[in-house]
Length: 354
Ligand SMILES: [Zn+2]
Image (tube, rainbow, N blue to C red; front, side, top):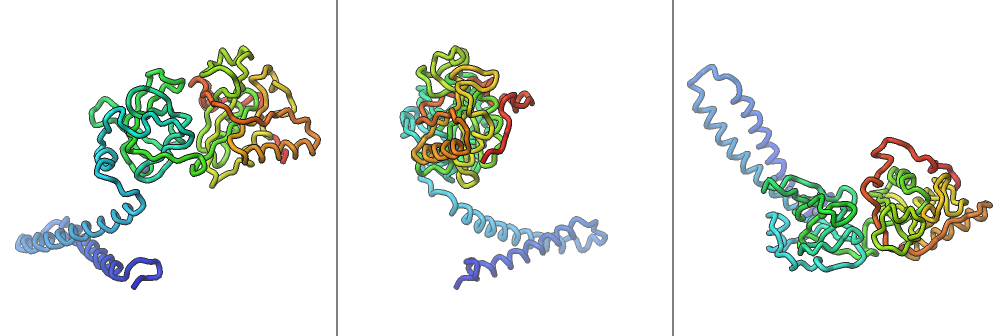
């Protein structure tokens, strides 16, 4: 028979019994810490303390068992090999993992708890033998000094699953970071099953665009970069020539349970002057154009509907709604510019329209 909340009746009784034992042992410990005035009683007190201590150890064992089995239910069952790597911090042999040469659109999640860890857009070819990512999703990965005293271990921030190590300063990508991850520690999720979604907006100088999205509710992370041009992996200097065809843009990762693409698209229109063609205030050139780079049909529909609404309101909308191309993250010094400098944007000011 089950109680109303689904906890079996017998386990409730066991729990109450264990709480009583724990409380009793606590009182005995307080009693034992008091100065003993009559040495004749010493042996009796120690004896009582030992029995209570033993009972408490038994109680702890059962309580741990209940809590651990409850926690365990939330996690995926691991094979012995997965346990060796994820729990006991092992390493898979190089070039052996199923995601080493895997380059599909989607997200890589924690094998143990399912948390989204890395976007496929942050995966790059390092030829080191393990999947390599130059960024993580939000705060999903935590870093700890490795037991070897040299490397930095990376773990799932949610469940502490061992993922691999992080290396800085190798100059593989502009982010100068390599999360070196065991394939065994991860699962892959295609875009339609992803918990977090992405959006790409261009509205002039990307410092200002990022400033507003970074502070918007439901946004997990933002990256400034270049997209919509011809050159691979362009630099800021190349984009500034106005000849590569790229736009300064911001890639926004958001939680669809906390915000919507429409809300973000409205924020995009409300934080820049979308009636200017190929410029924003003092910044002139096609790299400063107003554009929405949609990632799927749904985003395209929302963007086009909002453009239609603005036109009905009488605005001469210059925003281009175009399919997303590869997004190239910009140099590190451009990331989080206003957060780092404490300044505020010069031509991105919020103005309510919708
Ligand atoms: Zn996890």
